[in-house]
Length: 196
Image 1: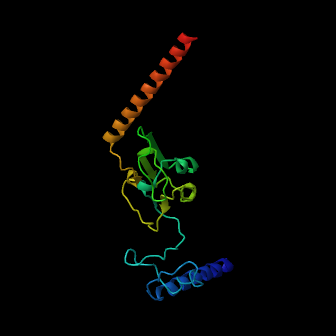
Image 2 (image 1 turned 90 degrees about the vertical axis):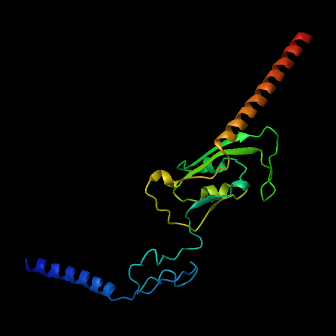
Image 3 (image 1 turned 45 degrees about the vertical axis):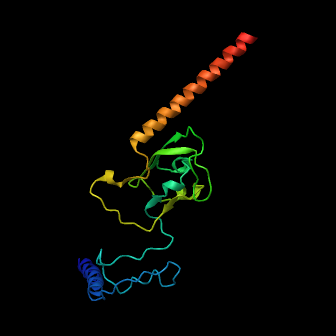
C-alpha cells in the first residue's frame, strides 16, 4: 500500500514538473524555416502552445496540402481521377466537335471540354499521386492547409469554368455530330450492299 502511494506521488510529480516547465517557457513566436534547416524540428523547444491564427506553425516547403487546378492547362485526360485511390476527383469531359479548342501553356492541344472537374478535399488523403501523373502539370498541391468549414459539402471544390448551359449545348452538338456520322456510315453500308 505504501509503495502504491509513493508511486502515485512520483507520477504526479512528473506530470506537475512538465506542467510547470511549460508554464514558464517563453511565448516566442515560431519562425518559418525551410525543412532542410538542421534546427527545423528543434525550433518548437521553449515555446508554448501557439496563438493561432496570430501565430502559425512553420509550413514545410515540400508539404502536401490543398489541391489546386489550373483549368486552362487541363487537357481533361482523366489520369488524375483514375489514379486517385479514394476517388475524390470527379471529371466529366465532352469531346469537341470542331477539333482543337486551344492549347495549354506547354503547347498540348485541347480536344475535350471540362464540363465538370470537382475535387472533394474531405475524401482526399493528400498522397500527391494526381499531381505526379498529370501530363500538363495543371494540378498542384499548394501550401494552404487551413480550410475550415462548417458544412462538409463546402470541401468540394469546382474547378470547371463551363456553365451547365454551355455543357448541355456542347453535348447536344456532339450527339448531333455522332448521329450524322452514324447515318453516313449506314448509308455507305447500304450503298455497298446495293452495289455488290
